[in-house]
Length: 93
Image (tube, rainbow, N blue to C red):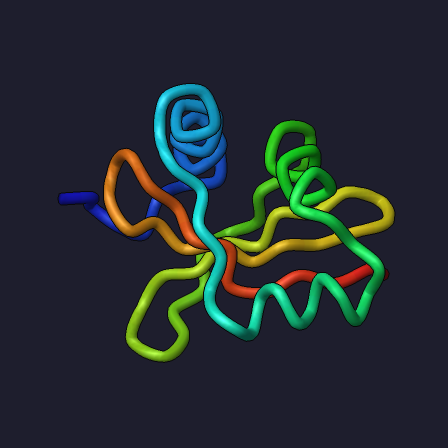
């Protein structure tokens, strides 16, 4: 069980751990529709998670969400547990 909200540096560490040894899922159908709408791929999302900046957590819809962004793209994630994160939505700036 995660002790949320995580500080941005803690969230970044957990994201990297999940990318290495865990699971990344996508909210259905919303996240996949947003990727298609903005001409983004799941590889784009992985790259944003690897190299992007994590903002302070926001509490929305009863859950903690984390905005991860680069200069051109943003993804919103939530942690399911210590081994899985879900991409909730994404867009190009």
